[in-house]
Image (tube, rainbow, N blue to C red; front, top):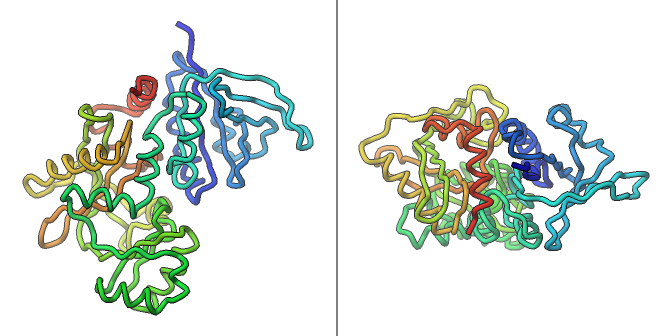
Length: 358
């Protein structure tokens, strides 16, 4: 049986560029080499598409010095165009008909529906959520609008637009009339907690809003939910969607919350697979994860995050990630491994699902 041509895309222009460059190592290493010819396409933070020679070039960062570009044509031929770069001039060296694409891109321009639109135009099957689900799930504000219709509890929030910060007093009044300190400030479309902060008072709120506005035009200010941070992985689509068990995040004690640094740079932050939970709560979280995923027209994979509120044991939805991390400490592959689906089988299943997408 002839091998299929698989493109794996990583890097990207978002603030999660480096995380993507770690996630791709696990995914590329798990590909069934008997089934696929693999092309590794790295997107620099400036937006240049380059062909990475191999996994080692990704590990040491040398892919950014590649003299070969690799660009997916938007026409329906579904071709990968590989060109030599000579003093800024591109000379086509080869074209490859792609059978499937695995985007290992987190955050803006990768997880938000933009690159999924390119794949749709090119007519090439791809792993993960489609244009709408990617866009709606990436935007925390619109995710909340959808989840509001499901009767699932989520944090009370105040939406803020960047241009409204010109009248900071008015914004502060809206927030303080609705919420009590401390509050969380989140860019609506930033990932891996980039630009997220916690405000204990008005001065911290102003600083947090100013920082969040550097990452997005839309900002959410949310009530603080005190409780356990729990995550659930989903796999599939429609009535066939499955939910994993539950994982718990234990942020390092010195971290104010599970921010970007705590997630990726602090060895004291831990994940627990299968934590003890009050009766019925695991089932409630798993059922809610599937409901939210399907309401957003999810496909393939997502990780859905919740809080279990202290004292009340109320399940509170936090956010959904349509292309969760695949690093060695990432919850998504760990949860499925605990269910008897190691990363090699998980990756193979996701690619097969992409090709079978209805």
